[in-house]
Amino acid sequence: MVIWITGASSGIGKELSYQYAKQGHQLIISARTMTTLKEVSEACHQPKNIKVLPLDIEKHDSIDLKVKEALTFWGHIDLLINNAGISQRSLIIETDFLVYKKMIDINYLGTVALSKALLPHFIKRKKGHFAVVSSLMGKFASPYRSGYCGAKHALHGFFDALRMEHEKDNIAVTIVCPGFVQTNVAKNALIADGTTQNTDDEATKNGLPVSVFCKKMINAIERKKFEVYIAGKEKKGILLKRFFPRLLHKLVLRSQVR
Image (cartoon, rainbow, N blue to C red; front, side, top):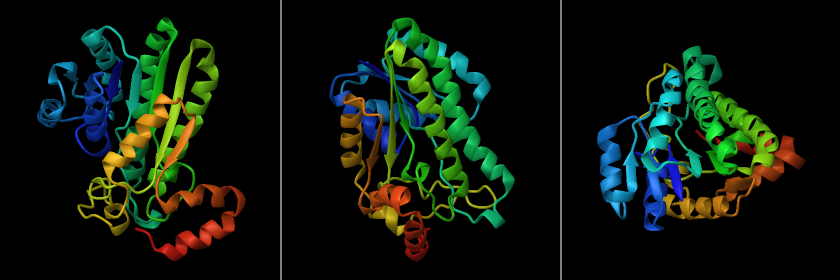
């Protein structure tokens, strides 16, 4: 199977690359920095099965050409894992509007642009699979993450529609919603002025090990699940949001999560 993974230079994307490579799949790995991608590629099992394709998901105008380039590597793509993204940690009243624009440009429009550019290839082959890394924040919200929540919520609407429109073309969509995972997502999060936070938080440090998370994610993709929540106790927020939204509101406020 040929798998294209975005955001492959660190965290979930890097670990997915390692685990899928160990299974013997042919990979295309993408992120902004070529040197880091080469390091990931060389650390993978059978590096000859890994192709490196630098990609800045925020540069929407370049994406059509990147898809054409990706298709030259192995001749086709079976699975696109939309993992590239960035988080946020700042109060609404303090946050520069450009931070919200960046959240949408990267987390939502970048993912939509890449998936839409690859869609004709999947339709032509009458098969394909989009996996989308959303978040529990795509299902409910938390203070300090307003822009991130908004962009992740948008992904659900778009990809639920894509699944419905292209079931006839044998195209699958799996939306993956992580809770806290031990990655650099908090360190790389944008604060109010658009700079990076550069500090971790306790919830992320105590989250699921990234290797454990990725095993569960790969299993969900193999089973072609529509939507999956991979998290610790914070996963209970999904049910609370549906049945007891006021209780969830109170619990989140009480938790003082940053």
